[in-house]
Length: 471
Image (spheres, rainbow, N blue to C red):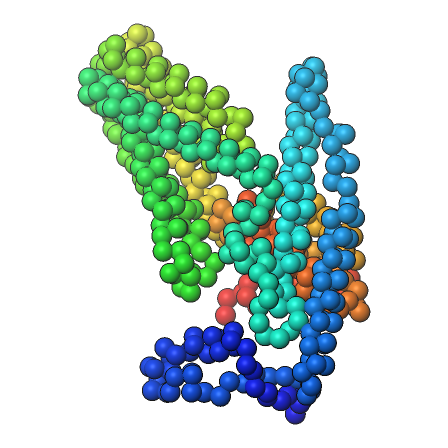
């Protein structure tokens, strides 16, 4: 035997309650109910209840002291406000005449915002996480206290400071407003483009109509995948243990293929119109011109209004609006100039160029989603933010062997390899690793974080390479 363990009777009501959990399984297996089973639990090498209670009190005291010492070292070892002196105000930025220098300081302010977010996460979550790590401090088998992680059931956003929660909620509301407003505008503009395409045979306007229709389809696909990601999330937890967030890039990948195939048909039609017999240039009516001008103005206004919102979805919307402005402007200019100048081939050539542009644009989008699903490394900005998070733990660790961040879809998975002293107690090593993991997963773009501990700066780091080869 590795160690001697003994059984003693347990008269605690909570222990009797625990046995009731197995009654349903006992009924299925044809066993007697748990009330008729002998109630007993393990106790290691302690025969006296008074000594047992004393050991439990000492263990609880040691656990609380370890948690308090770690919290004190982590929260007060670094002053995160020391970098704020490098921030420039909006008035100072406007006073800078050189655009490259102004862009540099704007990027520096954005980095300071990222570091402030990391500080808020660490300061708020560290104590909550450490408190939740030991819900049974006296080791008697009963959970005496409920930590913050247990109360919020792992929803870390509920533990963030009120200012950070309000900031994220504001960004989310603005994102929802911007997306909904853009969808409403697309519906109205699609109706106008349909009328315009009916009143004229311009192939460029048909290309613009197809683009708007597929934009709405893209919105529907994104909305559907978002709903599907959250559908029966808890019920399907065992089948999808890390969730289904990668359905979103899969949906975009499928739509990009639809988009490319559709505009290849537009390209084919433009080539066929260049073949004899040649057609006369099609005139554009007032409805067609007004619809295209309204599209350019509305899309430009939406892009300008949404530009200050720091949200990945909103920034993607801004980029989409910018593309729509260029696309619809050219969709109007090609047939208009062709009709005014009497150049019959300008409209089909313009439609072909627009089709090639869409094929190239969505081909790049498709490729980006493929490489992210394949495990592309995170961008430098994300890696710098994660490195700052690791630096925030420098008072309680000896160093970091590696920080690896990579995409698993749109979200990022990160691996930390932490250096600790060889004589670091298991409890302290566990608390440091778990706290770092939860702090990383509290960042909005991190889906999963993994923390391993090591005591040697030189040695194997990472994973077996066999998984990267074909078997």
